[in-house]
Amino acid sequence: MCLMLLGLALHALGLPYSLLVATGKIAGQNISVYAGLATFVCLALLSLRVGWGIYGIVGASLLGRTMRIAITYMLIYHYREVKEGPAL
Image (cartoon, one colour):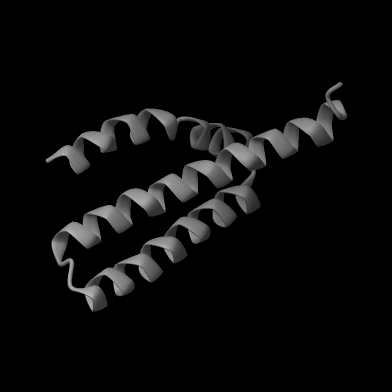
């Protein structure tokens, strides 16, 4: 149950993904989604081999979503640096 409560916070942190969608940064969207998907698949397979069952799948899902959010924030920061120049 406590793992599922983290989903609300991760959903709120995922709002910058909408910025990538709104600005039409299709490559940025794809990079963040594929990184999150790859993280989920690798961790889900690892958790099933270890024997954690459904808790491992839920944890892998949360970590995959966290990876997608982290990549999205990095890309938004990168696009801002390219457009405005380096911050002092």
